[in-house]
Length: 589
Image 1: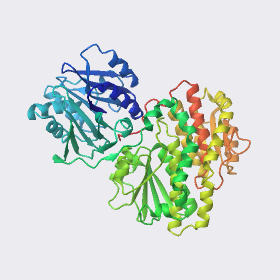
Image 2 (image 1 turned 180 degrees about the vertical axis):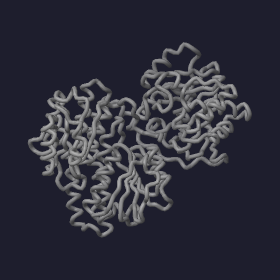
Image 3 (image 1 turned 120 degrees about the vertical axis):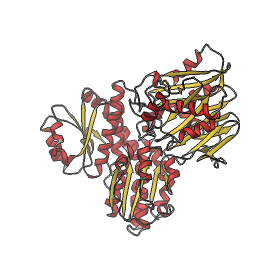
Image 4 (image 1 turned 90 degrees about the vertical axis):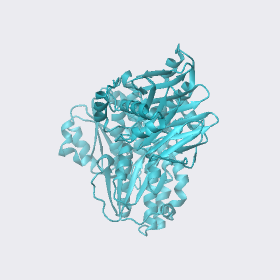
């Protein structure tokens, strides 16, 4: 993030970085102009709010209104102050913040060291400072120096360079999000508009290859040629700034799931059974679906794809985005790219590498994200801001939006009658009430469950059929929040290897949607001393009526699975909103 204001840059930067902390919180830092022409640098391996105390304790010249800041998710180099951004050149004149990965950093570092540059960190980003330093010595112009520098880089970057001597500021972007905005408060740059939404009414997005000088006016270069700034985009409402006052974000976001589900259904409910939702996307008829996603979005894609096959008899495949390279796309295939942030680097790369002409539909929670701008057709989930790093309500919204898409597409193509579709939509309409009931049931049962599993080192999650993706999502949530190993399997796979993991007391969480085959699988676990924790039908440890005929499968099961992970992590003393080693928006691949 960066700002050019009349005063108080540190305050703006800390406030904005707090909103961006979900992108990484291994370390954070600021570089702020000072009254004597120097640049004050503050860095910490604590959370962003520690920067406020560091700036407040500053005993040097008064701090000005120009500065840059960063909150880091470590890719290169360990978590230590020397590796925190901003980084500086040898003369301490230039300060740089960088999102992304510089793939050719080792080669560039070696060349720069041979030229006499001294590095202070282990991170790839520091090469940018020294490259700009060399180019500036030759050109005498910061804009041209940054433009020359990015031509030497390979990888991904959103860069802001601050020249402490001239107070000039230049930004550049390639395969990493960056936007710039102007208001009566000043100029602002950020990787996500939520960081600056309280201060601006509109913003411009940098495209790949753009280099922009941020002063009273924007000087915009595209591929080295001066162009007009792109058309501005209206900033979202300012509610996101107040969202941080909620305290325990993940718990609040789990509670918001019935409301979020109702919002999705209110938006698209009338467009499903008549096929209007699908027809409005302007996409060709398809005969098979290819889902590309990562993490929780991958599990949502599993639900959506299985629903299509179950309801319409159409083939589907689910591709882990980071492994999508080289996958064969058959004629008549629609690619559904799912990303909560719309900035997931693995998904973006997979779309870039898809054959030209392949129809792609994006399912995102951010209408202005890179993924949404990259493809021709977009469905936006109205989940609202999600601050907790572990996805909850965005998963529910993705599944519901995907189910509506599937039904609408089947109706529009004549593969499903409107009568059948209306019955399915009526079932979906019960989702908010079912989610709320599932939360109530889980909260009653969980204290005893937590007591039983507190000391367990690992968990197995099982399901059958439509319940399998939910078992996978439950295992993922437990890993993310409790740092215990957790593996999910189709229950029928137990006897093909995973049963070897079961010993006396091993917790085995079963999403029990009354599939008759589960009885034998549960018996196999019990015979080996496993601790059975069923979620579902009457008699389960956590009784939650699970949908039998919903196009989403047993969606209600996700709530007790989320709450199990949340409550166990809290009991163990872990930060449920910011689990270790993770970031919500994964912008590197």
